Image 1 (tube, rainbow, N blue to C red):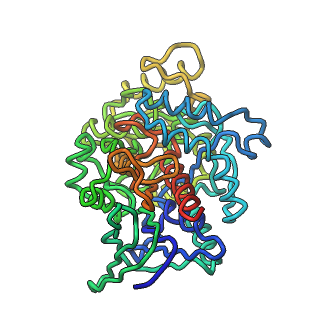
Image 2 (cartoon, helix red, strand yellow; image 1 turned 120 degrees about the vertical axis):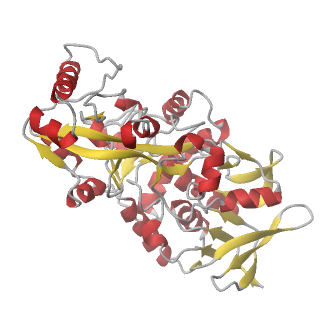
Image 3 (spheres, one colour; image 1 turned 180 degrees about the vertical axis):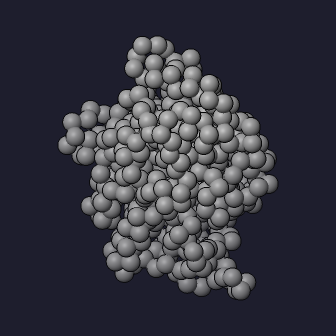
Length: 451
């Protein structure tokens, strides 16, 4: 039997944060990852690396007034006050400290996103890396881990069990290799960072039936490992109906088209050439409306100004490279691209122009437009998708897993394995909720495990 001070299962953002926070002088951390391809296919790598934090030094430098209390109020408003209050308070409070730590201790090149504000955030508070790439964020965390002599990465190895003593406290863990061989480690702390269950169709149909017919666009390791462990150990779970969807996954290439195309002034239409809602309510809750369109498809329409503004996103550059952006010099050409009736599309463009110009109210209540669109027009065909789940094991303010409402000594959960801050369903998701729950709970878990 081997020994370590903390075992972390999963090497995405949550696991990396937990391992790095726990790796203090004299403390040995083992980071076990099940997949050899985790550097390319994790939810972290597939994200746009948005980390919301209120009251950060980057905000102060930019003259942005914000506070954890204001951020918490935004979360409560977006979730209709159906969020876990303990987790939400813990994450909004620790977020400024978290981004400082990521930059100063982990070498993550963070900056404040100031060119637009995501739906539901009342202030500019999303921090990201320069190319808005989750892969770059993940690489920075992996580089930081490589510099820690007391942090040992084991790949591939899957956590299959947690050992506890008669009192229920963690005493060890069991790892399994692809050949079926097992190794038991003695450790007083285990952090579950194995993500959620969005890659398990049966669990999705059971807990998220409204999005079960959508495309899944996330890491293949999100198979519900933490939920299965919870069933065996009698752990508390919650918010299993919560998820992040997305209304603009480019098809057929399955590349994320950033919602910045919408927030800078673009809009969505279906094959009739008509809009079908207020796009600025949020990209997560727009997944199901897009899926309800004919063929489960829609088009994002924007212009060259929006195109130029979105080039900062690596995902958008990938969409361009795939040839998914179609250009049209006028309404007739745009209608031909979309396969939509010209008259209906022309009316949609005219209505959007009037709303953006302030000469008329939008029929769907949209108020955030940016400048009116001008030809040439751009269009990308999209579908609705499931990105990741937002429910899981219940935790306290230190990310300790709960059983019958009480913390299990030595057992922690972070990221998709834990309850997040998005309430129920898809409409409570704010941009960055996933990464904040991953990095924030991971940081809290690692710090507490080796306190």
